[in-house]
Image (tube, rainbow, N blue to C red; front, side):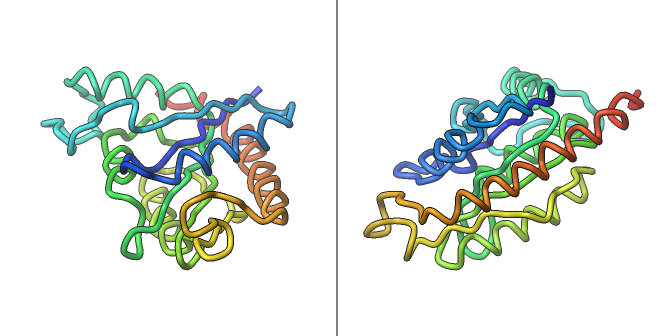
Length: 188
C-alpha cells in the first residue's frame, strides 16, 4: 500500500492550512487504497536553508535536515496544502521543499490551494518546482476561495462540491504513487 504525506504548507500564526489539511485527511481516511499521514512543516522548525552543501549532493549535516529527510523519504507521494501569498506559495513551504532533493524524486504530488484566486498561482508555482525535483504532479487539483469557502475570511467552511475535487486528486496521486514505485526501486 502506498503512503501519502499531506503536507501543511504554512507556519504563519493564524494559518488556515492546518484546517484545510485536516479536512483533506478526513476525506482521505475514507479510502482503503493508501495510508495517509499529516505532515506539518511547523513541527520541524526549519530555519532558512542552512545546509552548506546543495541538497542534490545528499550530504545533510544539520539534525533538522536529517529529521526532515527521514520523514519525507518514507512517502510514495504527497498532497501539498498551500496558501497563496503574493501570487506564489508560502516561503515556509518553498524553504522546506528546498532542503531536500532525492527524498522527493520519482514520487507523485497533488495540490490543494486556497486564496483569493483559489490558490491557483501558488499551485502553478509549485508545479514548476516539482518538475525540477522529478516529482510527477497530477492534473486534478483543489482550489478553495477565501470568498466562498471561508466564513468572514477566517473560518474554513468548504462548499460540498470540493469533496469531489479532493477525491479526484487523491485518485490520481494514489495511482501515480503506485506506478512510480518501480522507478524508485531502480534508484541507486
